[in-house]
Length: 213
Image (cartoon, rainbow, N blue to C red):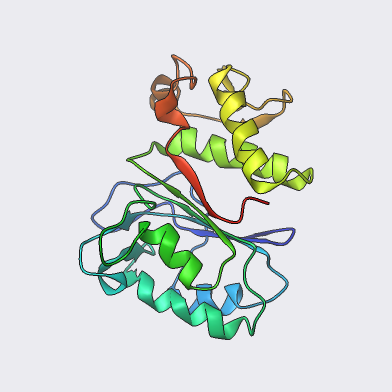
């Protein structure tokens, strides 16, 4: 799925894993399709909403799930060559614990995204919920689309969530400007954020790595 100069990839259902109903419904989400599309220099941002598993042992052990299979993050290094010296401006890995690493791969998936040729990467430090995380990134992209610099956009998004400007209203999550970020939430999804998203658990784990502007 494309949005302006952003390429979004994901799958709402996974074999043997919990579903991600707010992931982009890109049913052709495979490694080859993703690398082919992400190599297009028209795209400046790549957003991946999926499941990930970071295992000790380096990039070959870091797995990203595409809905029907998993691939190692090491394979994403091909993007550096395919984009022919025009690196991604931002690589977002919206999945659990994508900014954690070990002695073999510092900063986890997010660090590996920089090695794959992106100027900046955004990952998470702990397990995240798909409702509040989807709302977080949609709010973040609204700031970015207004021309706010990357680090300032993250700061503004955190503040909007911490102060209750991003909030549940009926079956919708409303953004800082009063415009819905998510709609048609199920009763189960509403219950998960019914008490608000101001607690740092919902926003403090999202981290920017690389240049802040």
